[in-house]
Image (cartoon, each protein chain N blue to C red):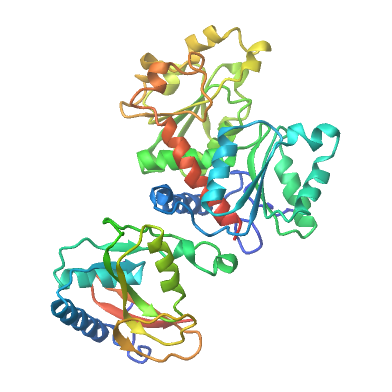
Length: 175
Length: 319
């Protein structure tokens, strides 16, 4: 797999720095609140972040994956995405304590779609949101409790996460 | 002038599904991948997705069908569409209304999608071209037209083969029976060769095999044991009873003796070969119950996968 590390001139967010901050927030909160939440990553970038957090936090609970593809509100204009990755929730969603994880929080539409997907599988007791980067520009009332980095991006540039073979993250701008 | 196939639009998107012939490999693979993502919807607490919410799907079956119509209906309902089943053979057509007049009337009822089965080859093409020429944003899915094609059956067969055998490029696949009258066989041959199956065989009596199979990349066998030797997949085809009344076949018993799939004949195939049948089966005519109910049969898996495949087709064309 080819890996594209972002150039510093193009990278408004240091993804590794953001990850370290996000990890520290979650570690502290899980310790203080004596919780054992289940991490659920939104495909694709959020799933990478969730997998790495799950390992680094030493969580024993199962890891979940959410697809936002079937509940997107742009289906009528963009159709179904290519390579839809499946939702995998290998635990009882009813009454579960969950932290949903995504790479970038922008309009809030992906999170809305992922929450709809989640609720097709049951009624969790609590759902919180953790994101590697919050780039502003919200179009829906969605906010994250845990945020690795905040950055204001103008225009329609896409902030895209990549992961190298060692598991390290990098952001690049597209579009 | 070369006319563009009406099922793909100017941007390369699937607008209608009319035939496997002319469908690029990447599009077939994308349909199978999408079906895979839909497969677990039946296991959810909420067994519905909102993709076709507010859309109207009309099942237009000018020819009888139970399984195909039902699985299309389930697939459309799982995608939250409103589904209308019209048994056309018992209504307007029998009163003399022309096909396109029927279509115009239904389109005027704000249909978004027609699922069409018709005894005439090419009828779904005609409907799609007619609607396109009127500028109607209505999608057409061929659910079987005459002897021509049955594309969603071929897609669910390809899905089933991929599920059990993973890689198309090393497979030997035999289609057995009435290839001549079979739209399933024609669609399957296009799908399998497009997906890279290197060894596709047609097995049957000379009276039930069409000419030109070799030109489609298919090896022809009249001896079933020879045709099944070493194959990984056996696709049995239904023998329609009316063929027996013509001069094509002597009797069901005679047919079963030569071309019925028995455990003894299946033993010529690879030990882990799977047995498929599009249904409905004629036990004791083209397939022995010991095989139909045996461990190598994946016939009921085909039915289950058929719903996910039809969801993928509906979801991809209706965007």
